Image 1 (cartoon, rainbow, N blue to C red):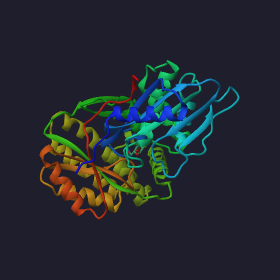
Image 2 (image 1 turned 30 degrees about the horizontal axis):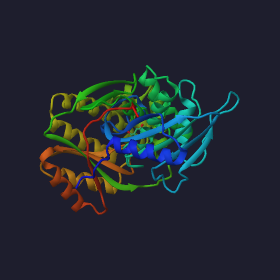
Image 3 (image 1 turned 180 degrees about the vertical axis):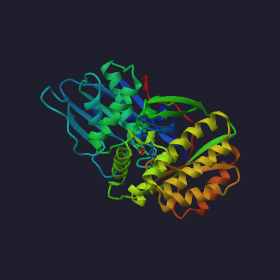
Image 4 (image 1 turned 90 degrees about the horizontal axis):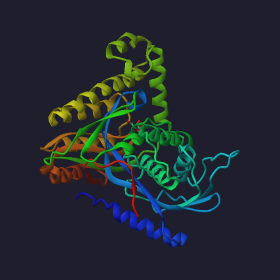
Length: 391
Ligand code: GAF
């Protein structure tokens, strides 16, 4: 059975009531921002390519109020490992800067405070989230963007430039969480629109909305519930490999490279680098093609492209894992499934499956029966991006 997704109202009520218990008064402002699922276009954002995500109905909510002085207290209601749930820090004065530290989850909060475009007053806040943590559906970006949206309300300064807001949150993640991510997760969390997927051009940081409202078609997210803790260096290593090779090929980024260019450089690259670059080049064009297929309601082509994307991530980019491969293989066995693939950074987390609405139950049963672990399922429609919440 698919898991129920808590309503935003429920989350706001839980956070507000915890705020009252913790701080002895009602919160005055609130913001929310969604997680995302990427339909296709993986590991292309930091190569200035295309990505094609949609915002999820699972969100992070931040409620809170201004306080006197410069000291902030933030409580999380989400189980971030065994971390302390209450974080304290000061709004930096002129000669002082905020620094990452512990608890780790608060680094996303502090990063956004540091990168906010405008002046942040001291505040107390409570955070709650329905985005599965560490599941490859952008729980971190949703926390950053929800925090930014909350700060906009607190400071009375809404940004008129959504790309700048997304970039500020991306920089928070680079500098405070040490993760050199691309722009996809923060941008879709800011810009998502109900009933639409968003083709993002990560070079110009602009998006093209594509409707996804056919009631006969559904998106199924399957959480493998595994996260392989590698050395933590897999993502930065691949990013570096892409950038170094683009330079070697005389390109600003791999967005400018073609398969023909790659063939010309084949004897200068080791076999692994060759495969990595082949993934990026083919994935950028698959993503462009997939957006057009969806615009034409051509779900069959879209599904085929998803399967090609998964195979390329598994064999060329090598960011899949046996659990994700098993989930994808099981999904594409089911009649009524158009396509399936791993989604997000990889090495665990979720798969995304495009299928006929009336095949959902059959797909869930079949996938679970073939999966060695315990999977969790979410049926999700494309949802809205970040917004303030009226309390
Ligand atoms: C992670 C990153 F945060 C994104 O920027 C993107 O690179 C993705 O992995 C892979 O497509 O979610």
